[in-house]
Image 1 (cartoon, one colour):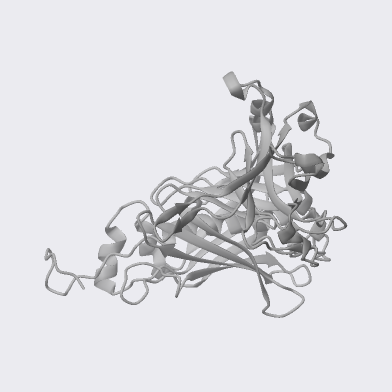
Image 2 (cartoon, rainbow, N blue to C red):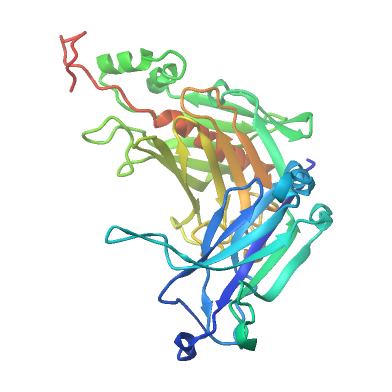
Length: 432
């Protein structure tokens, strides 16, 4: 399998020094200031990212060089757009970091503005497209208009900006998951078959499948049978030889919570993601658990929460991702250790690899996988990206295809249930 070229732009090791009597009394080195400091990080073509900045009161303290505040992931088209001159004042693209003190909001009905301390700008240059690791900036730099007021240094920002190659494998389901599609790898305009996806369900849950294609059919059958649940859905991922190399199945049925017609957070549906047992053929071992539920609002969302099941401790679960996906428009589910609560990276056991299930190095954290799906009722053909560094064999990729299929099917599984009508009141507007 040949990967596609991506690069990771990481911004980390953030720290802020602000001279003044208020900071001289502190001996903690790095601490939280009474007025919190934060920054907005901008890169043309990407959403603005906001992150807090710790205050550094000692000139002898340097922020942790391994800490990552945020990352941007760029593919070839993104780099081409950034390196192409823009119009008017945006002729050159920049990485721009604007530092603020205070919070946006209101106090007793009066608007409160943040104080802008200064801005750091780094031009996008040819080295961004060379595909090599490079440190673009590392150290302290003065920011703001009063950088050296009265001969004394003004506010200073510490940061580390680094580019690293981050090649990925890109896969796509060629049809709706419920129709057992082929899964191909994308390399430019070339599609190479890699896996096949086999969807099945228990006989008792066949009526649930009708709802995806003939609206109302499943609900009418549910009224007569009294069934208001979606269960028994299974997915197996097969390699080109027909061997099953990963699987997922519903372990906790998707049912409406008491007093409502949707799957609520208090009682989510759940999938178990499985890998083959290399020691005992025809046997399976649990690898991960995906929970899903619906959150109501102006725009409904389906929430997907994924736990990795630890092999070191029986039953131990490690939270790897919790994502909201628009029920109407769809969205992206992802696993990214840099974006997971900004906590210490958690090693991710390899699903099969060479059989040793070695953990990934915390330093090689960051992006693991993403899966883009469509909203409910649409012909969703999941698009999956998988970091090359997490794949050592075909089974490694297969387990993430099973996870992607479970995410996609959860959009349908979390659709609202129709209310059951009172017996003998067909056509009545009243419902239970």
